[in-house]
Image (cartoon, rainbow, N blue to C red; front, side):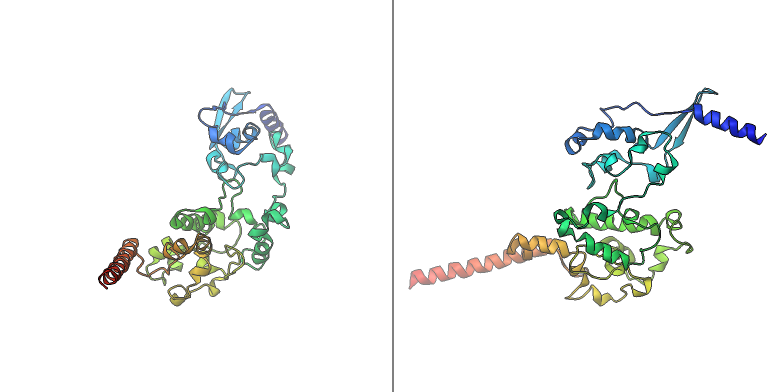
Length: 320
């Protein structure tokens, strides 16, 4: 009976075929996809399955269709991909051509994933990003464990260099914190890399005053990494016993936030001159009374004062 069952399953899956949805250029392939990527049509060979949140298997023996949900780890959102740092890539730049065969072989499914240094390491083109030093920091981090790679935090199909390019710092903070929370607030992912019991982020941080305000205005790594003046974002994640718990570390003149959260913003603003670098620089200590309306009121008062002095001086010169 067992042999018959095995043979029946072999026949069933051997004759079943994967029914992919018809590609609708007006809906799924948006015009800007072609503007940023010359391999859009080739990539659709993968995305016609992996770009859909569900897929259908046609059972030709019993003439029925079985619809299943695409596993979240294998789903690639087209909009996210074509706006990511890898938006100009072909799928086969990183993945084996063996994936063109369906069902995918066990060998291809277990292929070794590339990491950042495989493409960006020891290349003058990317020297400004210090990938080699990031790798060294990661090796000293508590994240340096089996099966933990760059992609556990930086999804290669959707990652954006948000902190470097964000116009709104709050958006960048939310984006970066979500990288941490996708594991630390999702036990189904967290338990893939550790045997620790489930933790409650809010309870673990119940000592933090104005907890919600802190979570919204600083990144997790502000308190959980070792500062590094060379690279933009520190990657040496510290053990929880070494996390910052001293308010003065941030709420002081020499705030660590100026060396982490606001580092890139401060440097870039200074390049634009005194007005942008000093007057318009928003790299202030969180908790300070920083109000743009008060700033402009101060400028107006200062301007009126200087104008009054100038008028007074001119009148005195004329009378003399």
